[in-house]
Image (cartoon, rainbow, N blue to C red; front, side):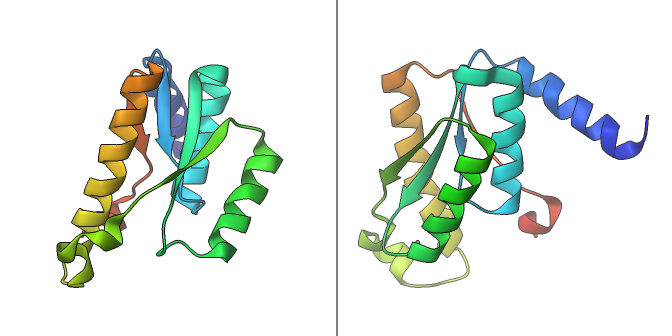
Length: 129
């Protein structure tokens, strides 16, 4: 088994440990891959969720919807209000923290209301620098 296959196997094994899962789905490669993998493993126990706000373009929404249609996973949109946070609007280097805080607060609330066991998002090592 090659390195990529081993990583895929470990990802699917970890996803299979979750009784159910919401995946934060931006439409980007990382989140699309995670949503697809979670759908393969969890089926109807996975929901991909995309946050709509003034900072999310119509083009990005269209691309996200195309991927959902191709892959066939459950998907919904929610509205976030990061632009109402002065810390986000300040556009400092920590801006992403405030955007993610708004997103994950909403996703955690949704998971609680709908009975999902957890929330996941796709990230790679380059994103963490």
